[in-house]
Amino acid sequence: MLNNRTEFERVVYDEKFRPLITEKQVRERTAELGKQITEDYRGLHPILICVLNGGFIFMADLVRQIELDLEVDFIRISSYGDAMKSSGNVRLVKDVNAELKNRHVLLVEDIVDTGLSLQFLSEKMAEYDPASIKFVTLLWKKEKARVETHIDYVGFEIPDSFVVGYGLDHKQILRNLPAVYVMD
Ligand code: IMP
Image 1 (cartoon, rainbow, N blue to C red):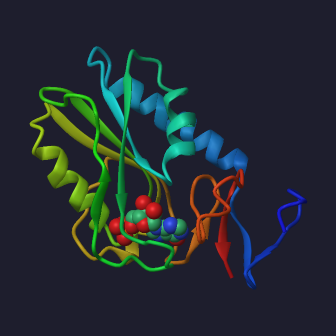
Image 2: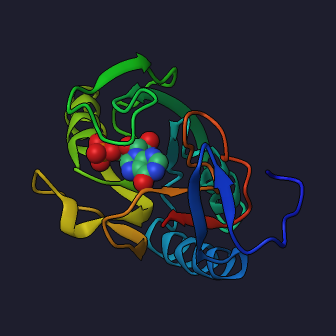
């Protein structure tokens, strides 16, 4: 199944996945976002909060493209379970540890789909009274939004299909694929 990384198609649980965004494209776009964030936050010492689990790979690559003193923290929410559709019911699984009052907070998401997670996170962060809150996501299924979403930095707008790899899972596997794949 995962024994040949050059394989064009992957079949997992009888589902076929084909490449959507290559490693090179992700790398180049992440570098651009890092540069933009570096310019926008100059002198501000931001705290980047990774939304687990899916955001861990993007976060790790993004912070290394930001040439600023910054801090990191992690928050975990749950909405999908093992399903391929958002349950619409977002809950907090692990909160941040850092004190966010008067901090410049940048939330790092893997993907924005219905926008319900983003809405939940935005309300949650507002409770901590930060100096600013912005959102960055690697992927955005723009046409799928169920609530109005404001995203400050978007890696790629993608069609409304289920994707895996580069942190994103299908039934908890495939997160370690180096590129983004889409289900056929
Ligand atoms: P939203 O609340 O519907 O915007 O969903 C956000 C979360 O759902 C993301 O952080 C992912 O964990 C998960 N998700 C949404 N779309 C996909 C997908 O295509 N593949 C894998 N996970 C997804």
